[in-house]
Length: 239
Image (cartoon, rainbow, N blue to C red; front, side, top):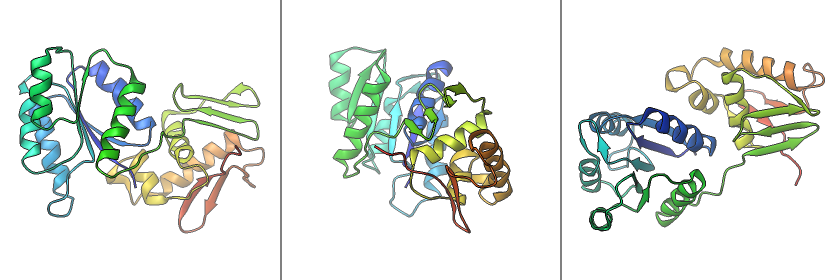
């Protein structure tokens, strides 16, 4: 199951950096640049869940937003849901930290912070709600293929392989579930989006492109395997 994260941050560059880092850990990330966008996303995502279920599994919330204070979203969310929420802010006041923690924030990170610390605190917040999340697979190495999801480097027999953004995102999704079958629908959802879940021809096209670049014999793949009628998997790396 892919956990959904709402990131509310109006700094475009920081938002993209955080989104990429969190997505690389296997989360499905939704972003909002304002308070109103955050509320709208929660309403929209909530419409697709069972009654009483939280619209997302985790919220990362900035405070200084263009149209209001992120605290308003925290208060509104806590009236209905107990979803883990981490405040990410440049504000360092101890009084404010205490108030927001008392209002229901699970944690408070002062900018600048390290991505590794944020990811660790996300895992702690989820674990406290009964959801155990192990650090995601970010490196893969087998049969001359070396993949680093953090740096987006792909090497084959020591030589760099150029992948398009979509090819890399598809490969990364398989690497994060190495050894396990990922269904057609899940791949389309995670790589292309909810509106593309029926477009299985996208997968056939891009898997053929990946095999042409990564397999010794694309017609007889040994790394990127097809599970007929179900999905695809990348062979589990040996430890």
